[in-house]
Length: 289
Image 1 (tube, one colour):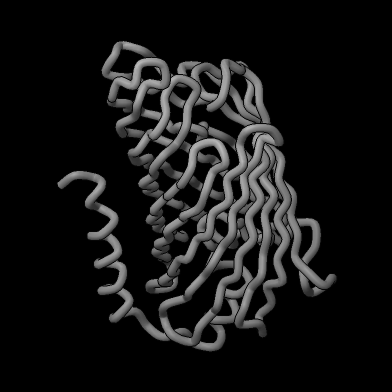
Image 2 (cartoon, rainbow, N blue to C red):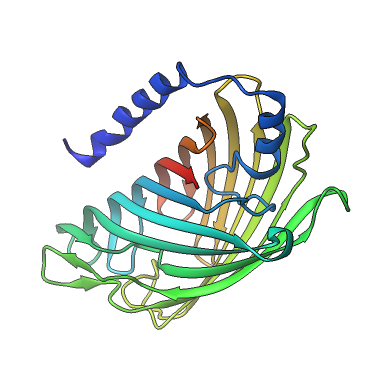
């Protein structure tokens, strides 16, 4: 089965599993509102309470690179999160993209090419440390800050014997804020993620540039419904303060299963000033141990 058909299959399985999932007890619902039910892009300000693993499949359309445009394909990536310290106010996250595959068009010649490799596009292998700053039991909102960095995990090869993204590093700094409380059904949250890329190659979309900065801002709402399907909605904005301006809306569903698993499905659609329409379909499975 081709990977681009995987999304429809997984959504069908998600809905099937939802019909057999258990309804939430009051205690479980309160815990979900504090620590779980994280949407796809905006991070919870409260740290996870158990070792957590995220497996993500992104099916994207119209990604722009330095030497290629209209890159359509998919990326698979994994993340492990470990909380630690007093009252688990710290967490460490290891993010790793392990395969990308798709088709694109060479900017100079218009030739169609294949691009694939054991890495990501703008997602690098990174190690991030997060610290909670405030909690709603002591202030009006939850907040946390994180910082970290990493490098590209592997280059992307092409069908014209060229290599994309065969070098590069990233430094990251971000802030999360939410109003999650045990007694609230609707959680509002926002994340600000700054990424400084340096020593890169064949990556910056609009010119031959080895250093650049992306700011990603997301805001979301998660409805902790009484049943087993939790709807969510996010708005995303990404900019480099020059040529890149992308805004997207992301409707999504979150389905918690058996107190240890969450399945999430979302569809991000929007517009880029430089490249036109953009789309990303995402399936994420979260495991807690």
